Length: 343
Ligand code: NDP
Image 1 (cartoon, rainbow, N blue to C red):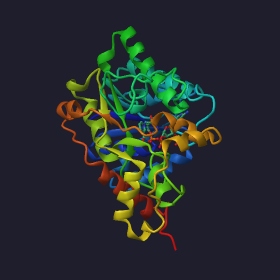
Image 2 (image 1 turned 90 degrees about the vertical axis):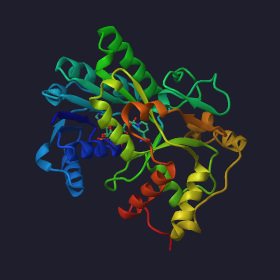
Image 3 (image 1 turned 45 degrees about the vertical axis):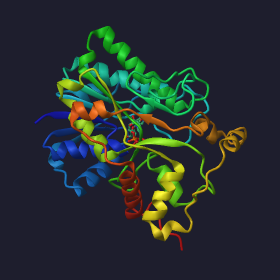
Image 4 (image 1 turned 30 degrees about the vertical axis):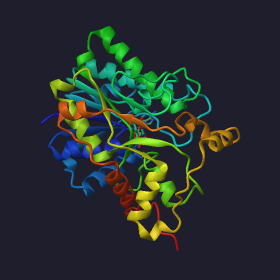
């Protein structure tokens, strides 16, 4: 059994990764930047059956060197998931780069120096799919890269792209490419382990709460968090995955398709769930006045897909249909009281 560092263990995906590692018998050290979150994370993981004696915490912030040496000490493997994923995008498109890129390099440098065998870094399809040369529908593979200079993309997309580019540049300069594996997930749905699911489940939450009267014509290659966590664990010590980018997504769903799945599966919400799609031109026009819409203008009216058969071949992890991920996300939001059926 190994000792595994999970950075950002309070996050939606990281809690699933930690749970699967603990269930497999590994020792897990999680980083938090706020000590109050230790107890919340411990309580959540124990409630889902984890052995708390195998779980410990270190305080560390991506913006500071403090704590990282302690965090990586004795780690056989590192799962680096911490990175800002805000619901509202900052207007400065480079604002998230310092924690995402420089914070990641802090973890990677400390991990390599401490002798970690492999560092699994959670990047994103955001670092793969956005390039002005791709017109219309488009299927992305591991050789595709987002253009971080493209003015149509959000601060989050810029941060994930610059971070992953910097990772490979650093590893190549050190001759250490084989000591990392990158995972590039699409939109991550599936069940939250507690009522703190962050930005990820907001698409489902907003539809159930009827936060929009109509839906923008955008789509997401979608992956279930349980499959994604299994991929993180499988990628950790497999020779097949050393130095690779592993795209993680099942089928692609539009917001309208997500709404129709929810309407069908949750009759108590059906009356309120919006299913009308706004025309792309209207959303583009509205983005002139509403800043929050600007980050989706590059997605309007297009269906982007991810090619992932090679990932299943290398790791044995198959991605369940996106519909299951949508339904189980909604079930968990209802179970933890994040959304309630309308009166
Ligand atoms: P969450 O927001 O739930 O988790 C993010 C984690 O990063 C939290 O633990 C957060 O800590 C931590 N974090 C943020 N800023 C800092 C910082 N300055 N120092 C230390 N820790 C920090 O997001 P997800 O679980 O959804 O995402 C996890 C990873 O997966 C991220 O790298 C994200 O970019 C990537 N990803 C997510 C996708 C998704 O759809 N969810 C899709 C593709 C990639 P705190 O709790 O203190 O805020």
